[in-house]
Image 1 (cartoon, one colour):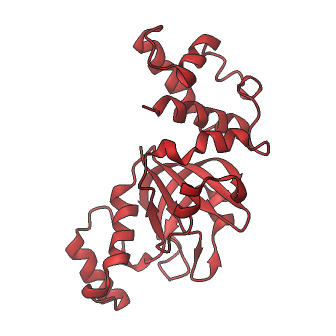
Image 2 (cartoon, one colour):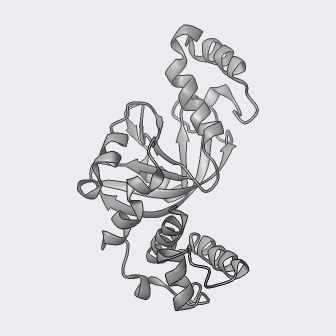
Length: 229
């Protein structure tokens, strides 16, 4: 599981509202076409032909494109920010949407996102502060994801999350309290069968798609804590 930061101000225009309302993130260079099968050499040629970025100067752009198209995976985490908040999401697959054109002001390279919640910038730790200062359009968190402390930040933000007990609705109440405790705090103990844990994790993954923001946050917290080594 990896964590990425994606710039939300592109060519001087904030895309935060679009990203949040339409549940996606994206990068520029739309005229390159679908990136899913493009090799590094093909991308270098396309960057030079389409945008005039010669091979010797294409390093950062090429790295950004490859991070977005290839390094990110379904289930990884992504953060974006505006002036006051950091928004945390669960990443989906890459797709190319040129239905309304490929001009520079249109974002065609996209990944779906399930937004889990937001955290005041003043509440994130120094590792995340460093990540949010990266200049490239896409940057990967180099430390183990647990050091981002996303679960604690989301849980501590009263604007998006309540207590575990109050946030769970009927969808997650199918998980017994002792099992939820096992998943979130002590998942190494062999107190339940693996098949039961797998079923519970499936419930939590389904809860990530809920329209209830508090439920999404709590499901994300549970999964993040379970993923800790």
